[in-house]
Length: 97
Image 1 (cartoon, rainbow, N blue to C red):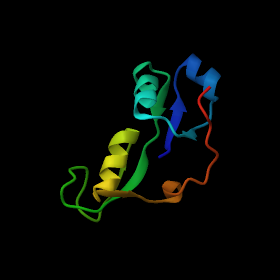
Image 2 (tube, one colour):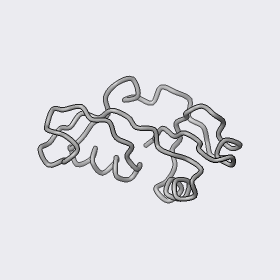
Image 3 (tube, rainbow, N blue to C red):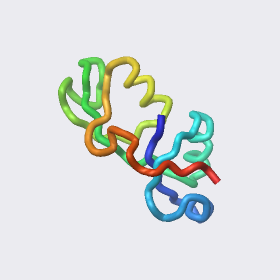
């Protein structure tokens, strides 16, 4: 599953540029890029589908910056779904440099 990122360090900017971008990182690759301070996750909108998710009431739309692994688990568990223009992967995906 892809996630949307923004470069926040000099190295991140050199590798990925100044624009936000979508990429499909493994959970480990994502964690490394975030922990090293090179990237940040761009928040996106989700619809809350269950009453077992604390980010919002069932039926509400919330904005969150979720780790790829957590997002996949919440979607698979039927707790959230992506909404809005970024609900489909329609933008260009950049591969890590």
